[in-house]
Image (cartoon, rainbow, N blue to C red):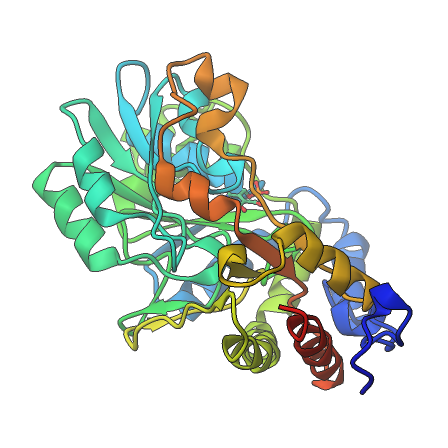
Length: 393
Ligand SMILES: Cc1ncc(COP(=O)(O)O)c(C=O)c1O
């Protein structure tokens, strides 16, 4: 391998065609047949397909109940609605997450209180969560960011002491485990997304998980019209109006999700092998901080985000990215626009200068591919690119 940077006219370290190794979702003939089956049975609206998915996904997770939803956002909205959360209530959530973690609570009229994340795991900081609790706090939303389970025992214990519901946002964490239990089954509710980029990609779709039958029935009454009629009378009395929006999942997406579920673990394993090969190499280079979770946490990889501390090298994060891109790498600054700095929340009382840890770490993250279909050769070329660039540090 030549040491001359591609930026300075040397050969690129990454020469492979990346399309196949990075293709996601991986849809096959089986997905096509599943969709065709729904169409041929003329079940594009009313179908058992979402119900079958509920059963299979609940079994996979070891959860009591699952309710298929339009998407992860609607599942979160349903969980908050079931809890009766609205004006005057507060919901605690990290600022470093996708906006859908916070917007359902805001849409219901509650105030979202943002809390810090840990600078290594990027998950909800338990101490800051505790500090942010007031008499108005009704729920906390730990987000298992990028597939790393939050410290659920501590969060649940604090929540119990303060009579706060726990809604796990597991939209990045299909198949991850905390102390031997699957994420999404630990809190009062677990929320999943099956949007096409997710580890369990159905195209669109979501799931609400709970072990509480009353919660399940209330969520069913919220927008699963025909199914509400089959519930005990205290719920079925609402069958002719339901309690709000329609939340029913599309059978076509449920059909794809069912097929994809069969290979979820296998595909998670492939990502893990590839990404961890890269991370182990990066760990040897200055500036890169790799987070290895403790043994009670079994993470999955949704995205491959890495902390780079430019002050430990002579190369700024911007220059690092420029050099890597010239080597052929697909790399970007992955900065979720911090929610507490967004106009919507600033207009509702959030202080954009809050959350110093979150703001600091957010400046130091680079995102790399998750290598979902790589046989390891592309990762090797990425390692070469990093080693070459780190030679200039
Ligand atoms: C952390 C997180 N929560 C919730 C959602 C919402 O899921 P959906 O897009 O299915 O509504 C997403 C989706 O990207 C997400 O990343």
